[in-house]
Amino acid sequence: MGSWGILVLLLALILLRQPLIVLMGAITVYCYYFLPDPPLESFHELNSIVGDLFFAGDKEILLAIPLFIIAGNLMTHGSIARRLIRIAQAMTAPIPAGLAIAGVFSCGIFAAISGSSPVTLIAIGGLMYPSLTKAGYPTQFSMGLLASGGTLGIIIPPSIPMIVYAIMVGVSVTDLFIAGIGPGILLMSLLMLYSVLRAGNVGRGKWDWAEIRVAWKEGVLALLMPVVILGGIYSGFFTATESAAIAVFYAILVEVFIHKELSFPKIPKIMAESAEMLGILFLILILAVSLNKFMIENEIPQNLVATMSELISSPVTFLIGVNILLLIVGMFMDIMSAILVLAPLLAPMAVNYGINPVHFGIIMIVNLEIGYLTPPVGVNLFVASGIFKQPLGKVIQSVAPIVGLFLIGLVLISWIPEISLGLLGGEAAAPSP
Image (tube, rainbow, N blue to C red; front, side):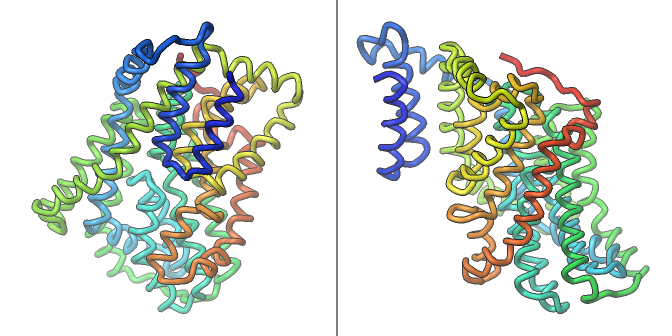
């Protein structure tokens, strides 16, 4: 059956609507059982899978994922999002489309804390949407802006998809975090420009120095959170995993003991919600790492690179093709599934064409970020429809022009590596085995 069997098995499981965990487990077992030369004679010889599961689970960076999710959930149930919004509103009051720009700033800052797009949309969108519509901003504009701003959670570090890509490809997660700053600022700038062009004369106010002082006094600890977390990572003072633990500690300290917006009895419930999100994700991730290890040992990515090199000779052609592929994939697969399945195959091909693996990681994540806004499985579309209480069709219409802007940003990020690699000095660490 060989390699064709993988395709047949994959299509059969998709047609049967099997969940990702079944898909990853079945493909992993199939590869270990049928693809070795000679094939295994019995399933009793699959002990190497168990060893690989321990190998995958022993990665320290895995701890960062649950910790960042817990920190994001703590802040969603607390007052950090509301305090960030108040600072942004006070500082942008006299600017054209100031309240809309405050929404974009708030999404960007909260994304730098939570690392999750749906969490950012829920926390900021739920608070900003009534304020925008009450101030006179069109309903469709407000929905589209906040739904799109919520996607910043996966490109502005710390980002859970970046951590997963780093695990699957073997690059430095710190390098990926740094590389995400420039693209994140670019996409935020495009959203702000869109706001000024669409709603520049709506709801302009004046500086209110008393409000600015109160907003900063009440929100400075919330604003310091991304500074502490990201400053420690970029300075090398602590690792990404340690920063995630500090994020949880900081969120509890500020929300429970200082702001007193969160009580201790609520924390176990928040932990249980986080555990429910993580249970299946971790098993899928470990299976994916095991499958990736098998493919590397059997030189499957290397053979694919050799085949593609015969068909595509130009890095430009490769980038065009891979961007089109990822945009289509983003329409039908969630971001975790896409990274787990495609990153180990596409990243070596990108390196073969002279594309830095960290730069390629950013390209891949921006493509899949756009997938959050495209049907039929765009996560933020469904989240926005729920929290804004609007039909899904109207939400899709509201994000359409912003998807066009993000595509312009994708082109710039793909063809100008300095946007991603500039803060790294144009270089990043090579993948580790």
